[in-house]
Length: 480
Image (cartoon, rainbow, N blue to C red; front, side):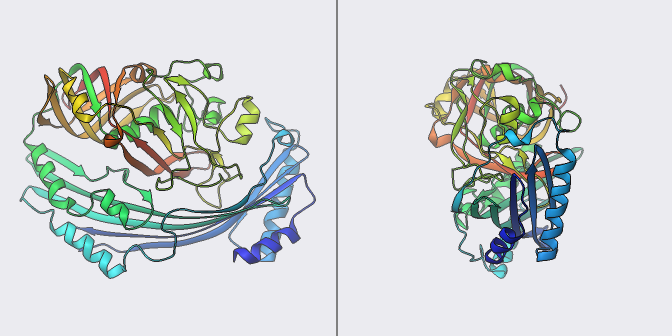
């Protein structure tokens, strides 16, 4: 299909300043066993193309799932018409935006076409994990699931760009719910956001601790039922990577999105407390905070070789030594704002236009061992795995809840606490960072569920992080 699209697009490309075609073909399958019963398999195949035209400063695009000569011609004609209609009426003169003309191929790990497991073996694995969850009569619900997505993408431009990319995504999860009277507690392997999603093959299940997870997760759910509520007050907070993932996402990733700063998302996803004049000098966090935008890490969920406008992926620090360096914004947003961004113009599918999105946004590992961080705490709580979140529309004031907590007293881990929550204000919170875990505490996480844009786009993002220790955080339990 891709070989036939190339000459067809070149033959149909109009006489305009710029024209590109982005073709996406994805096949996905999700298998779940719930309470030892195989659920209906979910599978899909989705293929189509987006044509983008820039001419005389106007910008237009049109999508089609009809990849015949007639279908592509119709999409091109519609894109040309929209470019003509928007010329001279847009917030930016698109003729001034430089467009990449890349060439090459990118293949993520395990894209050789072989299945993760034969379906019969995959179902047997999920059934075995499911059956191992029912360790107590108080276990009232449980499931084990694995999803896979195979994606192939082609980016062409009439002036010579030609990039082909292939990725395989694997999304394992397992969750157990326990109940006693009025108290219900759920413990999961990767959280409701499928935090252990990555690119690759069967090794992801091993890395995520999927094998044998059933009894372990079930035992923790039972343990939470008998645990006291999380204490309230100002204290140290040690966050594990399964919670750091969402903390990075909500209070660093979204606030530094350039289109949000420019006001594009104001009436839907919100605005940001960050302003353009902050870049280069604003103290976003403590000097221990180093945040990289890194689509080049192969196993992460949102890795790629080029973004959806052809800009080459590279590792870039957006925060270094606590200082805000640059925003998350692709070529068009950069041209509008007059600041350097990153290669993150991304679309969730062939029928959505690329906009500025997170890909892999990571906190670099520090030098503190987990034991050292625990040993430095006189009074605090360790929290693991997000269960709830709330943040204002400027991505500033926030509140998060976790599935699992452990008290830390006099430098030692103590008992389990349930319903652990904390709240803060983004810049104050990151400035309270007092220790960053070493490579041994580092884990690669992500989520398939980042929503933004009008019309809405739900996209894959990755967040890798070590465990991190924060000072004097407002911590509270469910009844505070």
